[in-house]
Amino acid sequence: MQKKSSIFTATHGVMTTEVGVISGELELRTTCNDAGILTLAITYVGAEEWYTLPGEDYRLHDPRDHEVVHRMLTNVLERT
View 1 (cartoon, helix red, strand yellow):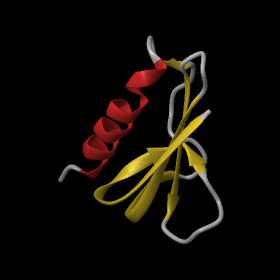
View 2 (tube, rainbow, N blue to C red):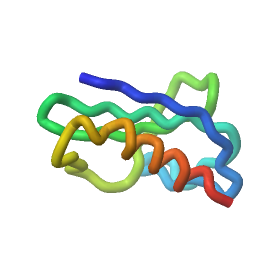
View 3 (cartoon, rainbow, N blue to C red):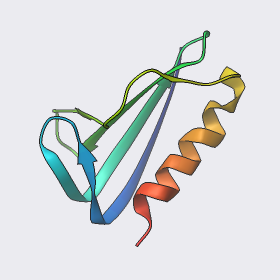
View 4 (cartoon, rainbow, N blue to C red):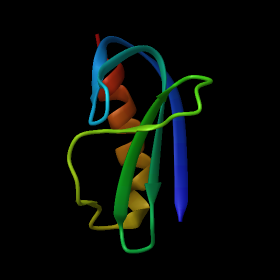
């Protein structure tokens, strides 16, 4: 299982399933298993509680694409 993590600033906020929109300095964590199942989690930098991004059943055709998808998600969530 691979885990990727990136810190970014979300000026306009990111929607979460549990608490709605969060913004500021955030950390995105993506996890991908050997079958390509992708999980997405986000938190405030330094916080202990992680939130999920809306949606479910994320699956990559090829788990080797995890790095590219993680970078793409970080860039999209950070855009202003």
